[in-house]
Length: 180
Length: 180
Image (tube, rainbow over all chains, first blue to last red; front, side, top):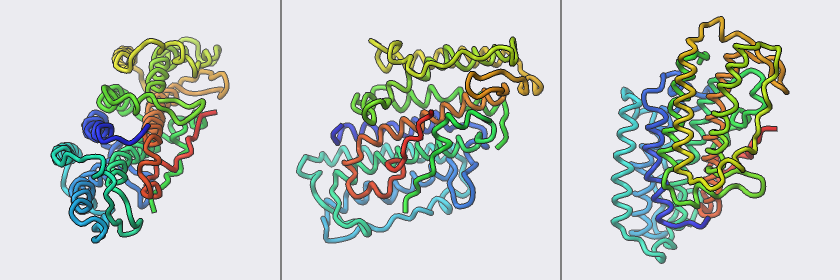
């Protein structure tokens, strides 16, 4: 499948509703348990997605359009949700993620990007030159990497409970593949 | 987190709505593409989940209650969806999965299982003795293994499009962990 802007927006627009349908009002054991020290729960992941909506995807897209490769993106804070989610419920986070994503997609559509725009380059502080289409493809794939993580973290809670079936359940054999 | 029947039902009851919110009316490239020869698309996975609702989980639970370890479960057909999904749309499959899951959970609740029931044993054709609680925990974890798979299969479609960001996206480093 080729990258297209409509395919990317279609996926990005569905993630908040999918997480909402899956996580809202689930017993807290499913949503607050993690995989051990220095790992994230589903609650942590939703907070991380919110921080991305605020500081990563659209701010970087606008930096590419405005500054090209002349200015590096602001490094992303992967631990911001530890502060920003404090005192909030999962329901509040799900609502906030949904609202921010919707606003960001409205802003993305309003840019009316053309094929030539998608080839414009920016500068990632660690990866170097990247294109606008790579940034937008990564926004969608980043949703998928965290859906993949949430399903793995939740499955971990029943690792013992499934008994001998663990041999057949691929998600229990996923090593995590953490980002550097 | 400990296994409990309410926690298990809470998760099982949400999976159809989560898949529906994520997959319905997505461009077909996302839902019909797979990871290569002998791998499944999201469309294939929903068909597989339907076959499980028809032939695996509740039929096996009832076999445990009726026959204990004296009769082995009927082996599960992991390729049934290749026949059964033919000619159907993804929207039809999502509706069918939702309806069957709802009926099965109604039937599970009506059994009014007590703690002693959950320790009853049945016989798996390959794994040997298994308990009813292990079967029910596996039902929920099986949903999670396929959410994990669907997110991985969809991410695979943008493997090239993300460019250098692939290094940071854990889902692109998941080897699949196929069941034997």
